[in-house]
Image 1 (cartoon, rainbow, N blue to C red):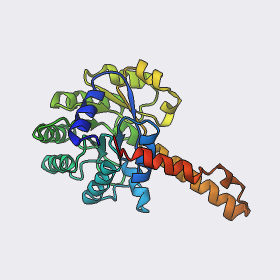
Image 2: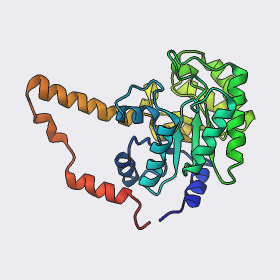
Image 3: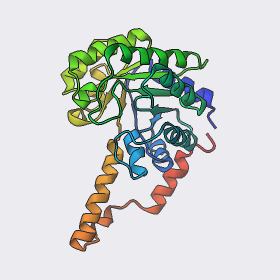
Image 4: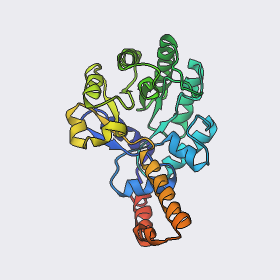
Length: 279
């Protein structure tokens, strides 16, 4: 079995060169299936996890719930795992730092912190406070004593609360504060993503969502993106399947669309392979 120390080092090394995809499971089963399919690392999805609790993606998951969930994902496979921890479950820098310390304690190899608040409209933190929050997160991550990738997110473009120029100003400041990875979710297109990558020296995460789902992995790599995450997209695909199937069954009285279901043996074999047992 791969040790946690080996996972942390692997995760660090993945961010040093090349371009890799980091899918986002929402439970232990999806984590194992993604591992069996060849994923090299995983990241939690706050939205996907919220859906499993029957809650909308509106910041309604507590820190304790997110930590327990992330620990389950760490235990599910032998892959390194990063935590999607929204705004760090705190407004103050000290609270964000505590979240990072707790993330490390449960075996996460990294964590992402957003710069918008988890309330209606997702307003952005003031610039100076946003930078202070990342600086506190970086200080906490460096006190851990082993590799830990701290991803600083500028979410205002996705949430419509500031423009790309402000996002670039912010990630430059986050880079200066010591963040290991920078992330501007869902810029308008490939050229805007290129601007993001070229604006900083540290690695950049790209999200395969919105207009960027048209890009292939080689195209993300050509733009200079180091890591491609999927966010809640695969979870949303599964929920689209639920909606479609129920519309057919309840609305039309037809079961024909169930023919696309994976076989039990296929799922069982992937769950076993993805567990990491014997590796």
